[in-house]
Image 1 (tube, rainbow, N blue to C red):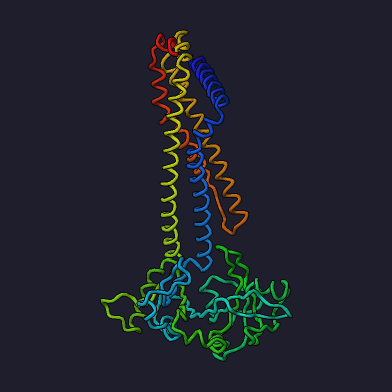
Image 2: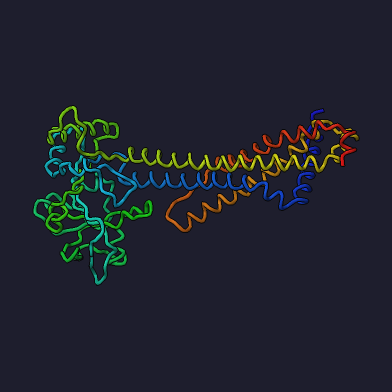
Length: 425
């Protein structure tokens, strides 16, 4: 009995799909124009999910490269967007952080394992060596703790030391991009280079991290912070965000304690009243990832809203075209009923046609979304990713639209009186 039932169901479904394909072939242009909204809606969803998923992954990798336990104190609040815009006046009027602040944190914060005061020259550097010039690497002034606080490891040679910092030694640890640019990947240890005309000796090479979020952390040169202040006094003497204090706790569980201890020490040194907010900023990888996720979620919400409108328009179009189809095929419906077709047979036939129509639109939208993700991934550094659930969601939503908006026309067809339908002109 069950086998006969399943066999009958398969035959019925196959017959309805055949009718649906005949109807689509008979009105190709009309069918295409009907599903444009479905295509755009599903395309938008698939492409949006691919881009947002890829961007979130790139963001997590980029911030995790600093170290998931990094806690950094700085003058200005970290910002992702709005480069070139000046910070608010309240932030510009804050006192600069100092190396003495970093030393106090290292001395008084029991939860913190290492402290790294850091200064940066972003762009504008002319680095030459071996008869070649590097691509304007970031010049960083730091201490022996820079590597551990910023999740770097040595590839060759040695790190800068406390002796280098105390004696203003002209030594440098370089990233892999600098090695490739100046020495074509050959051993640079012991070789001299110049930074804006100042000579330093390469004593170490950092392990390669790779490109992240469109940039390369490997395009870096680390020199002692005291040497940095001699080379670039304008950075120290400016009123910008001249010093960052990077710290790491003794264990991941101590991150909240490290933040609290560092905050209390800086508030006390900077004489911030108990009822006033901090006059410095705190950067953590987790906090930045959370903020970026909130931004991408908001963008996703807008895109989903746009896609929903397109799908709604597409669904209304499907209902209209199915109502037209019912009118055009009234005699056919009367004929089928006169030879024994039941209401559920007619309903299932028109629902199958509607779902075939929207399913085809969904498949085209999924294909375009996947193609968009591939193109973006090929021409940009963004690592796009298309989860399987987004493809299934796109197809499921398109079929559901066919079911929902095709139900009324299908029921209208099923309720037609066979005698009146056969007389229809």
